[in-house]
Figure 1 (cartoon, rainbow, N blue to C red):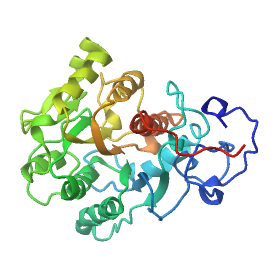
Figure 2 (tube, rainbow, N blue to C red):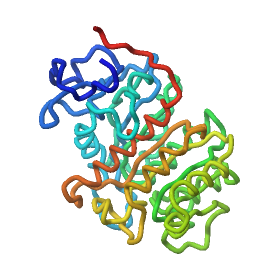
Figure 3 (tube, helix red, strand yellow):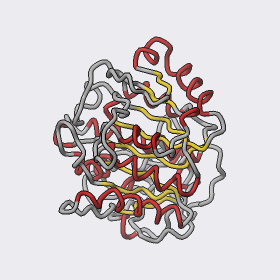
Figure 4 (cartoon, rainbow, N blue to C red):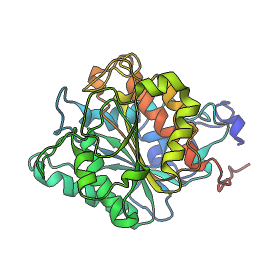
Length: 330
């Protein structure tokens, strides 16, 4: 089946592809309203042999400062991704899952009864993925999860440049060891695991004088300069550094992402965010997380759908210049 034939209805759809499919390659047709959930109907597996990207949930929301509920983010994103799972991701005109071996690796085990142990559990979870040669695409969870994830990445790659989409800079200072979704990049800079010179924060629209040396392309910059110039500036700042992409869904305006814990007005549209992300080819991204989706505050699943789509864009971006590895049987 050619990429242009995806969604044509000409093939036998089947069901429960998360468990019944044999191959990790290719999008699969399945009714959106039924079947076992996985991200994009990917094969649900713990086998990382030969895998390029392991999609994984981090259902943690004990570090929130406002409305709780991001522990349900991975579930909501998986459900909304079913609407995307059998079409080439417009405007991309190819099936990225034929170019990259991807699985849904399931969720990190969160021991809510021992919250102080959770950061180490998240770090170990991601380390296990990286040690097998795969990269991680994590679904939060609140934004604190980026700190233990970055610790795992820094062990393998050294300090990472971050491309950070958010309404908040998350560099407010607090005490060492605090578990707070507003201070994890403060601690990451202090720990030396962020390459500050090549890092950039996009869409910021809350005051914080303590920027920790990180460059801002705030919401006003994006609105005034447009998505093309914003993407070009991000690429200039990051250069050839190894980079990690972290996307807080509250970077989007609440009109486009009401299902989040700390919404802030005057943010990016989903269109702007996608156009910027899709233009970041050439950056040496090693991994990504998409955080702060709270389905219970959502309207018509628009926030979960935005999160699922931005993740799909990242996979498409990462596979843009790769050859097709998998051919469908005639």
